[in-house]
Amino acid sequence: MKDFWLSCGHHLLDRDLDHGAGLAVTDEFLKAYLARPELAPPPEACVAERTLHAALLAEPRRAVSAAEIAAIADVDARENWQLMIAFRDHLLQHATLEAAYIVLARQGMGETAPLFLNQLVHVIMRNALDGCTDPYVLRAAELFFRPQRLTLHEGSLLAADEEMIAGANPGPVSPLVSMLGLEKSTAIDVLTDTNAQTYWERSDRFDLALDLTAGRKGQAALGEVIARFIEHLLGVGVDIDPLVAARDVALTWYVGLDVEGTKIGDALWRGDELDEVTQERIVALYRLRFRDSSEEAGRLAGEPVYLILAMAPTRALRMKPQNLVAGLPVKRLEAVS
Image (cartoon, rainbow, N blue to C red; front, side, top):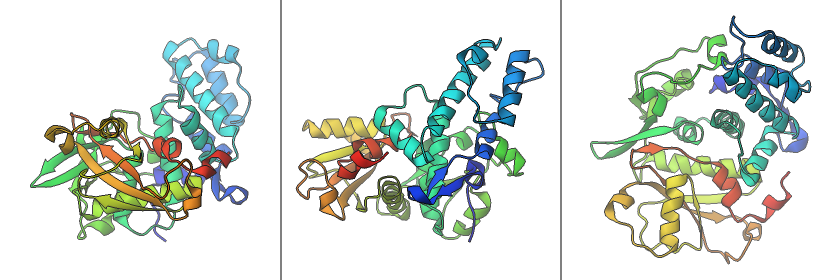
């Protein structure tokens, strides 16, 4: 079987078969966070920071007091440690990463750093798509944890990785990328049937753009990813169909897949007419139906749920996959822990 997304660290985790094959935190996974540039003490770091870092490398699960963090001299380092320890403690409170994510999605992300959330979704999605052999599905899944920039080219709507568009990664490079010897590249190609098999060797470079034009493979692949994400996290089977336009859509229930999609859904719910500019910002519209209607919460009475994904006026696209967990009317959601 071909592997992919080595940089997410899935090989450092264990599957917890007692909790639906979710991912159980290991010491090795926690140590990967300690290797990040934000936490690895620089030569000029104070004794308190170096001592804390060394202690956690030896015992990644050890309790860390507020006083230990407060003793760190550098203000930025102190904030990084506060965020990381709070996130680590949240992960350790739950049997699996999936359960930890569900709680964040339902109760609010709080001060959890977007970087940590994206990494969490990255590795959860790697677990959900284990065994997947379709490069289009894998590339579509990148939208869940990698901000995109969209552009119209010769009538096609193309999504490219935002950091790749910038020509360089503005954030610190994951230590796993360095440890695994993964190459970085700034050349971007559009994923096609001709080059699809190159995805496996370049999956950690995020240098393939995806065609999200209505009616094409990219949109259908994203719908499949959404269905697999829902089933993996919530244990609920759904069928998702891409729609070409937002005409004659009765929104009994809808979920915005990002901030812009939510705004558009709110407008349609109020009965507002969408102007042409707003309609053009809709990237994808899906109709979701539960395979087992007994899973539905509320009073859908068999009516579909609509999912709306849209780009910002700047053509930036930042999915919020947590909306699928918090926004779907699913009975079983109440039982997830």
